[in-house]
Picture: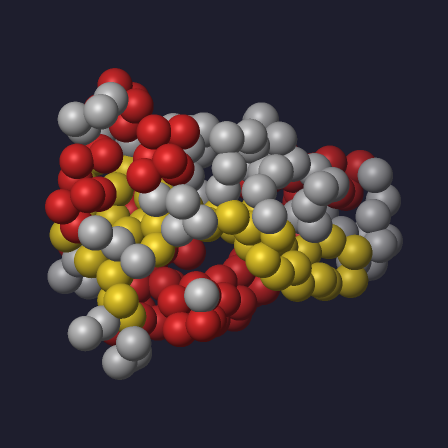
Length: 190
């Protein structure tokens, strides 16, 4: 029986789409549900177009005992993947799914992590600090932003004339290459 993945995302869903497509070619796992805190998030349409169940929810439903937690218990995922999910993840879900929630961050944690550090905000900070390299961090989620145990990091070198857009492009390439592989590795060996 295939392992079950649930994805949480807040925006366009490019990582979610990449993960769904990756596992549609897999015998080991599949994305069974995509959840978003924004009812107009493009990720919902992308998931549905790939025949994956998708739904939005309110902040109240996310943090309540009988909202999203119940849906997750019914779905019984082997892994919950945060792919561009911008809200702090509720402790009530973390307690019910210990060591089963992972996130991807567009920098080499512990650098450039924490509340408000996502997407172009991270790339701008990396650029302004003239970093020689950046990358992605895939980590377990705990009760604090970007502080869970690191699973893997992947690096890319930066030149002197990088922009937020060029850094973003390099980070997306790393995300698309590594995130599905690390998810698969966790499911098969975790």
